[in-house]
Structure formats: structure tokens, C-alpha cells
Amino acid sequence: MSPWLLVLVAGLLETGWALGLKYSDGFTRPLPSVLTVAGALASFWLLSLAMKSLPVGTAYAVWVGIGVVGTALLAMALFGEPASPLRLAGIALIVAGIVALKLA
Image 1: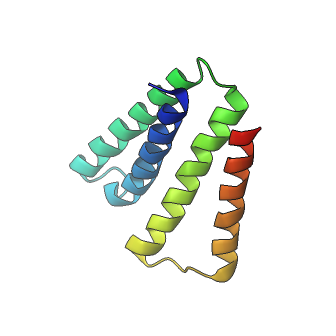
Image 2: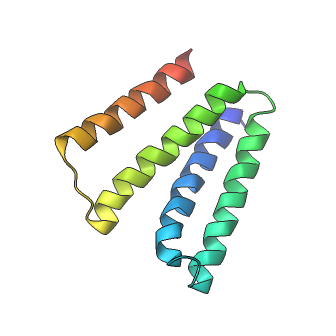
């Protein structure tokens, strides 16, 4: 599997476990808690596999960026967090940074 595909999947899993933290209610709800921990472990594992052949700084930054953007967008959709112009501009800047790192 392509290392960039691994980073993408790891980033999507990061979004999942970040949202899972909310659903786990402080790790007091068993199923969301187990899924959150499993998602985090899978995300870290895939990122570690990708880092075998990708620069650590770039891979980590792209992974975090995917997680941040995905979590912010889904939090707006799922939890009614505000979608202010400044927040959306910040997300756009993160996406621009991810693209720049990928192309560098």
C-alpha cells in the first residue's frame, strides 16, 4: 500500500478517534470508549508504517492536518459547532499547508 494512502487512512482514523472522545463521555461509555482506543491505535500504527518511507515531519504534519480538518468539519456538522468565516478560513489555511507539505 502507498505510504501516502496509509497517512490518509491514518488521518481519517484520527478524525474518528477524536470524535470518539466526545462520544465516549470521558471513557464512561464502553462501546464508544473501545472504538476510540482501537481507532487511535490503528491510526498510530498506520502512521508508523507510512513513516518507514516518508519524512517524519511531513508525514506527521499531514496526518495531524487531516485529523484537524476532518474533526473540525464533522464537529460543525454533528455537534452544531459554529462555522464562522474565520473558522472556515483557518481550515482552508490548514488544507493549503497540507497540500504544500505534500508537494514539497
